[in-house]
Image (cartoon, rainbow, N blue to C red; front, side, top):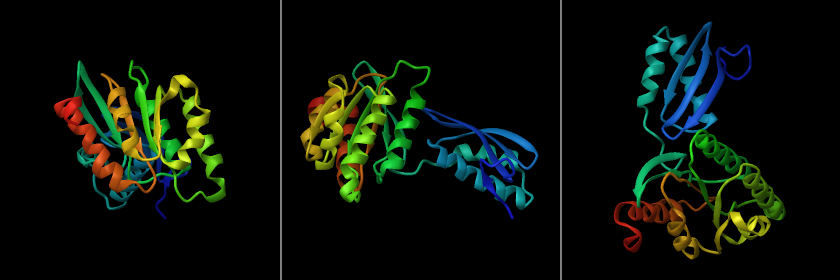
Length: 231
């Protein structure tokens, strides 16, 4: 049996992971040997995925150190905590596209990841969030809990859209409120107006891949490339 995870007896054990604007630094114990390596992906789940790969490498008798170094060349996955450094007036900002989908757990995880990215910098975090679908009669509670998590993590500005997001937006302090609308187009101007140099802009929503991934994200990219008027 080959195992991976955080358990002390796992074949490949995750010891530490730290996310930055260029990816994650991972420390792991594979067998009896400890390794530290970089991956161009964000999130603890991606660090765990890398452990699974290295556990297989070890089991086949290949060189684990070489494989760990080569993990830094694995491309990012589109719309899954995908990071881009984009130019803006007076500098640049980081766009974190996690628009593939969203639920309470993945929302909290994405927020935790971008707040970790901010550590040791003067960056602001702007969270652009679409509503979470499929929560039925618990929707208001889950959205409000997410709002409390945003406050706890000291996110700088929250811009959100979707009818279910109204419950979240209502509990935010005025200083965090960057804009709310039923549709993403309702907050497009607010998003572009909010972005400034050094910002980390997280974009995430549930079931909105066509709207966020194919329309909103390209608009933000055009804003970076051409300026506010042409976005």
